[in-house]
Amino acid sequence: MPDGYALYTDWSMLGHQDRNDADTASFAGALLAGDDQLQRDLGIRSTDAQWELDVTRAGRPPLVVLGFGRHTDLSAIAGRLTRLGYHADGSIFTGPASSSPGRIWAIALRNIGIDSRRHLLAGGPDAAAVRSVLAGPAHPLGHASAVIPLLALASARLGRIATASTTVGSVACVRLTALIGLHATPEAVAVVRKRLPGRFTPPQAEITALASPTAKTALDAMTFPDQGIARANQRSRLAASTVLTGLALGDPAEVRVTSAAVTGRVLRFRLTAGQPRDFPKLVLYNDLGVDICP
Image (cartoon, rainbow, N blue to C red; front, side):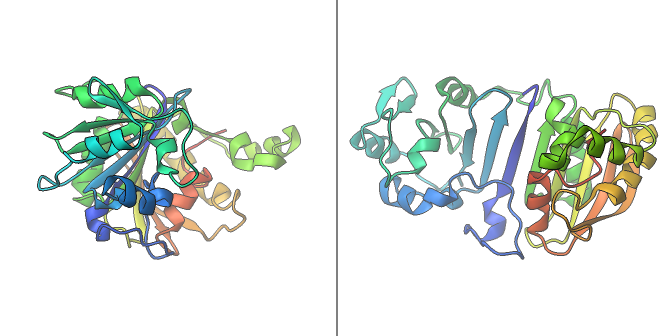
């Protein structure tokens, strides 16, 4: 995944339910709007899974991967899909070109692959992407040199991760124009840029992770080419968080950066928010502040 983002949720830590409230954070959840229909049609909900990974790569359609517990039987899904008009192409089931209004889950899951051995269900508009999940490379992170240090750091500092957002490549760098949005006139961008002195090297990858779905603190970390560059970005990005946080949402109190440190080539920040649901909202609106590239 050279450029893109992946959203992760451990549904077992949320009691296998979507707690749609301000006191619970969840980054992944692409199928939640159609979960009732999914239960009716396939006999499962996305929240029945142990975990969910929603992947979007630059210029490619999204991909959803659900990992179920080892006691979950996925064998009946193939027959249900066939009765719904899906046809098998090897290990992939492809649905009709147009979906029923009463079956909105089928929009995201036009192609579905099931790996009963690994208890995985993968789906998306791109059949090739679904096949790649089922192929199951022995070392899926073998070439993700920018991501591995982030996962190692998050695991070491948080233990089990409840939910997280990971961005890789160009999308890990938030441009001022994207942050300011409709007000991004050249004059407005110039005014904000003057308030951001120091070094802002584009990060190679970024992770925002919570140890608990009800946590009001989060870890945000970025990978750089080496430790020296990571240290050179520490002071400027810490200061930028004060200048930029809340710029897109209009509320500077939405999130605060309470500490910053460098470990190897990873620059990390500790974030606090008024409520857990703020973290996914801030990431969605590029409003964390520390990941700016002016």
